[in-house]
Figure 1 (tube, rainbow, N blue to C red):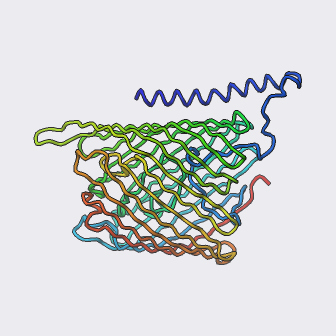
Figure 2 (figure 1 turned 30 degrees about the vertical axis):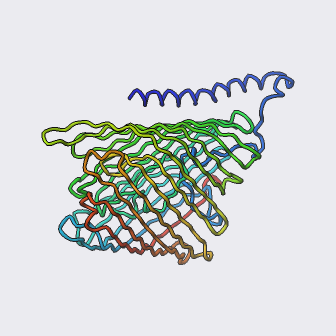
Figure 3 (figure 1 turned 90 degrees about the vertical axis):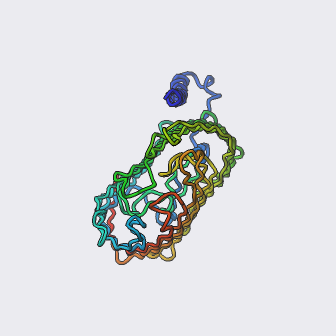
Length: 460
């Protein structure tokens, strides 16, 4: 707890620095011109620094620029039917295939001003199944993404996503095709078959450009993963994480960014007996080639220290074991948005939460997604990824393993408001000591979605 308090105090200090500087700038603004001649001005768009993806804290928007629209209210409803050959794994002795049906109204607001851009989406719904009717569930999907320029030099960004669902298509997880360039990775790569699940990911960051080519900032992130019915996911457990970081970034020649960051994580898992807790600290250097907000290429690396305390079962009692390790942390990412094509890819080697395993893991994860606008009314996307999760501590029965997925979909616009989407996902997981996964490692899913979407401009 003391460590969390220190991080919070650090975030407050970093926030206060730019605010104090803003007060000083206001005082300088009232002085004669000759006294303000050395003050840095960011009046031109090219003067504003971008926040490099390794320390930016947000996911890449895989949207082609030809389909981007701001200041619109979007609303509609979708109907989805999905077939899966592995609905609830081998909990009942053999895998069960099933067909599900979902209905989901959705409302989304995308608004931009001279100082802010924010997107808010709410999509409740209901999913029911032909065979495993006890998994029927009301769904909740809420997300918000905000970027706000408090002053010419100070920007705040925030992102939050919450999901409550048994529908694997609506979960924010490894197999959704989401790609991020950040170094503090939310691990959702261990995927249960159809099961009630609540997950949440949040991030908030500050970036302060105190000189023409210099920026400092801070980020805070948190994640939660909760299975309300543990009997549906034998071998998987709840988990949570909190993290904080501070960074310095320097721009060279308008398009090259170099910098360093300090990061802290607190990763918690709740196995059957006791609580597993890992704290990490890392000092990382990064480089980003950032010619525009629609293209970035980043690399980062540095040492990472972890301290894990985890329960250990003996023949007569439960004891605590402690493990301290040093390991390298490294990663790379690329994001590109063009008129007809959008592409994102990332790789990370870092200590992360266990995604339902008994403790924190050394994770190697790579993912990529591409979206292509084929015609004005037809688009397609392909995504894939691999994740290796190796438990830091093996004092409880080890659950290390890997996940691999691939997916493809096409969407056709039919008329002015109707869209039809066809999709397929393949998932392979190898976790020998996770009962809900181990005997049925492969899952195939195919779906058809028909949606009615309407848009209207706002603020015009």
